[in-house]
Length: 138
Image (cartoon, rainbow, N blue to C red; front, side, top):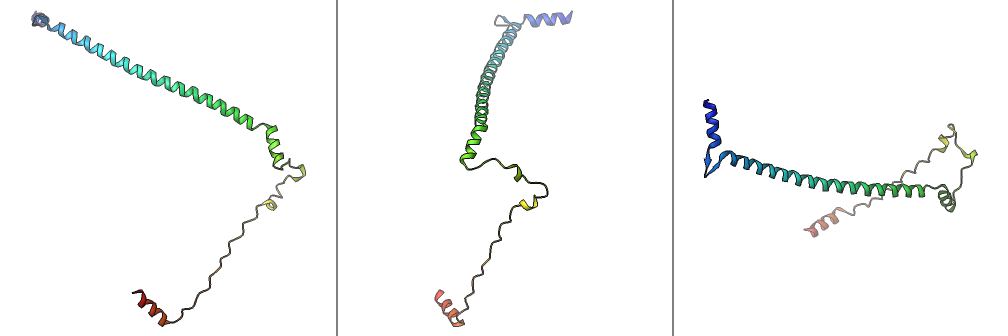
């Protein structure tokens, strides 16, 4: 009985004619409204970020398609054949194919080693000339 009386007293406790339970309820409703507003703002910013990423994905997909089309155009056999003929290239003769035994003969020629040239040394004129040069330098 005593707990029920204490609980009734808490629910009936008034401040300037307003019960505490109503004030607490109003504060809780305000907190919920504020939290819903924050969640909605965060969802809107995430939605904008997702839309931006989707636009980037679409643009990158278009770039990939363009690059694939360009690669296909550049790899056309007729185009490559025309380029090679204009450069003076032609198909390799079947008889010019290398075998495993002929590979050492096809090894690249090593580059020649650089030649080191030693400059001739100039003999010293005399000890007196060195002294005169030292005196002038001071």
